[in-house]
Amino acid sequence: MAEQNPGERVGDRVPTVIADELHIVYRVNGAKSGKGSATAALSRILKRGEERGVRKVHAVRGVSFVAYRGEAIGLIGSNGSGKSTLLRAIAGLLPAEKGKVYTDGQPSLLGVNAALMNDLTGERNVILGGLAMGMTREQIKARYQDIVDFSGINEKGDFITLPMRTYSSGMAARLRFSIAAAKDHDVLMIDEALATGDRKFQKRSENRIRELRKEAGTVFLVSHNNKSIRDTCNRVLWLERGELRMDGPTDEVLKEYEKFTGK
Image (cartoon, rainbow, N blue to C red; front, side):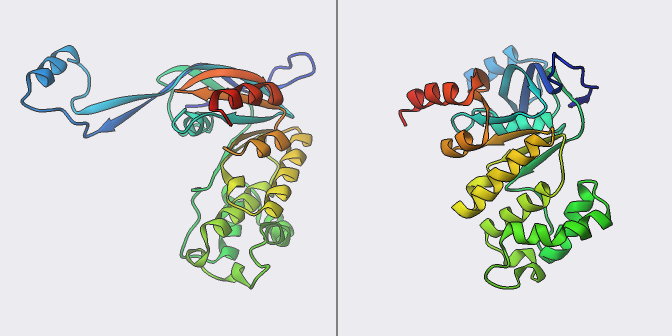
């Protein structure tokens, strides 16, 4: 799990996240065993001592980096490269198989699948979401209208008073982001949330990320939209097959990544 660690200044920069030779391994139950075959029997002998019927997926392989306050860091890579897994490990939701993750402050993970209550109204979810992030009821009340306005879900009707199950996936994702963005975060991790809105909402989101950086937070953004990464991030981590392939300034890393993908 991610470990809390007081930040020690490095020059004028304060580390917020340190990943030290981090390995994350998923264990998948019910893997095919080919029961009865000679190959399967040999495999069981060679793997004696491992969990029977469990397949291991090595999702993150020896990743190391240091993130600092005021940075916005893009995470790029092919599907299945370990980007979302890395964020979940930083958030303390996945244990490390090997290595360590240290965080200064409380990391907050926002994904398009972040849990809100489908049977409750958007209004009620704003309150519950704010409380879950550690905001007081007074803070939520003071920021409530800004959250609704930022999300834009009331532009075509009074949707905030309707149950979440009546929302489109884009409306729900915009509301999730708006709730998360209402609070100043030590470390905010965003997994593809900007891909769900229209360009107008994306611009609002990008501006808010820049504000969060100025307020001395650190933002991680997973996105397949290179333009969003360019417009928002000053640094990029490129993952492929669970390994950190490149870490550096946004333009330099995206240039190499676009050569790799041919896009």
